Image 1: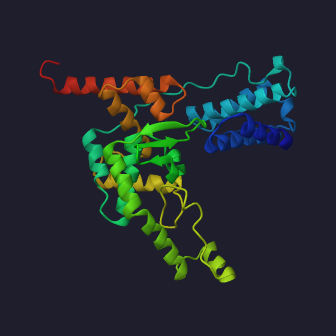
Image 2: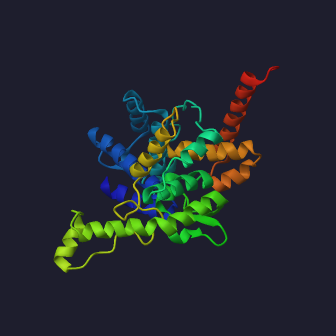
Image 3: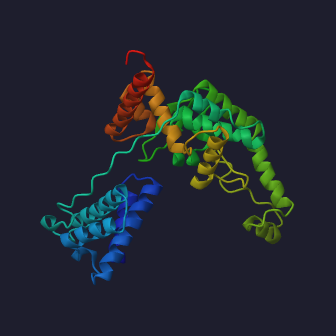
Length: 324
């Protein structure tokens, strides 16, 4: 079983342009499915049947997994089965995922903010070293519509201040260029001039004075030198440890400024991303341009923003126009 999983992982790494998070999700989903098969006494993935896949999907539903989760796990298993078929380990007419239909996903309302709320959030950070950094983060999230992972992984070299754009590697390994608006560009320049180096220096000082109890302190004791913070020189946005953000760390910052701005909703990076799309549509942007800017492979995803925006506009019209 592990041999098949190992071969499948290599296939994904070498043959598919997947993001690290997507790759990890596929690997985890397949391992969980194989563990399920082993509990049924099946120790060779090539021996799984259609009934095994169907029973696993039903078990996931009974556990209360959401439709989107079951869909993703089903897709992972289907990809794994296709790999085994391509490798000749399963006959093509015996593909165990054939005919397995994932559950329908309930459509949820996409949340996005008004321009006034967005401005309140962006103006919420103070003028401290941290506040200057956080404002730049919020400006980039709203000004470019990029994903959390893309912002976390962004390098200093990905920003072209002279021309005014960022290069984003994207979720599928396909690079895209996104223009920087003036407020976003100014916030980034201010961060680079007045904040980023101070964050690095603050981290180095904490190491020198023994406040940092991490591996850095061991390095000083063993080698007598202060190590350069890992990845600090590359990643655009860094925390007080001189390292790139975690997803949780970035979500926490965004949520704090949502609370500071007095929003009724729990602010997330996705809501800011959705606001980017909704506001562009409201101002006349075409769907193809938004699709390219946001890095969506499927154009129907952008269509959802269009539908939601129309519904919101109609709702406002019905409530406010005297002859509605």
